[in-house]
Image 1 (cartoon, rainbow, N blue to C red):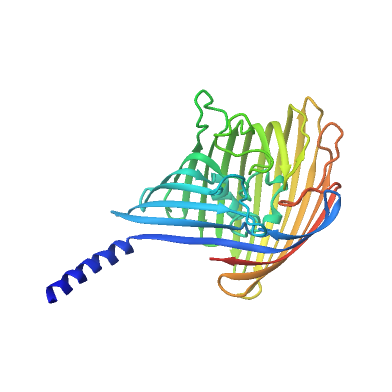
Image 2: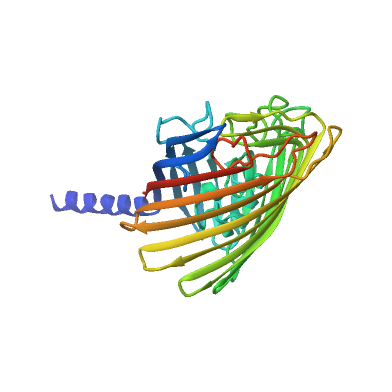
Length: 385
């Protein structure tokens, strides 16, 4: 009897040890509220919003200790609309991330699957719309630089370095996954960040080739209305730099990005498509200043201003569209995981989109205005798990 108890105890100890070396975590964010906009397609609009501040999603993250500082890792992540339960990308379950790989404490992480690019990983956390603040309504027009992670890269291999005294770097390559179409709908990016006390700096680059709906749907990016990318072109390049500095309860930051769409094919936002003549080139510079201040451990304020300067060229004329976007937000934490927020956003558009077409305001995630001004206000509840 004692021998049986001893054997059972040893087996149980090994089982506990094996379990301790592996883990799977369910995580996510639920964001729901009410959103008012004074001009969405020509009408004022009250709606129950999902993801006005932070994306609504759930995910599974796992790790297995392989010994010697090496681990097997995976992530499966899906975004959805909390109002109706539908996935944020049609016909796709894990529409944000789905990858598996190996992580070394000394040498970094190598993963394969669907993943975010280096602009999202390194530069976006310094922006108002990125992971550092989580404010979707403050994203740059059409999320033209992907700082608000509107799309991720499919069929990709990605390397992320270990943290070397505050320095991190990495890169990604997304395959077209189609024989004879090596350059159609492929992507690559690289980036780096450095953190030293209160100072954080970052730089990143992203390039997409022929991420056009219908050319190669099995490639690296889902394109077109109803999918992820708001703007698609024969060639897209995005690069930028950013920095922020913290002093006590205050943090201030600056981000600059440049995005060029050569031979722009499609443009859409929140299901609304824009008629784009073939041969149009659109180049955009975004200049963002942001800041936040913790009035108390529970109550925080955040604000940002972005000036977007655009240039349109091509066979259908030229234009100089410009956008001014201002956002103000107050957030109160009810607990470590749950908070409530109130936010206001104002955007003013000017100039032309080319060929005599007047520019319109388009606050990120909302239906575009029919005029030059758009105002939005949101109040909501956010829960993280």
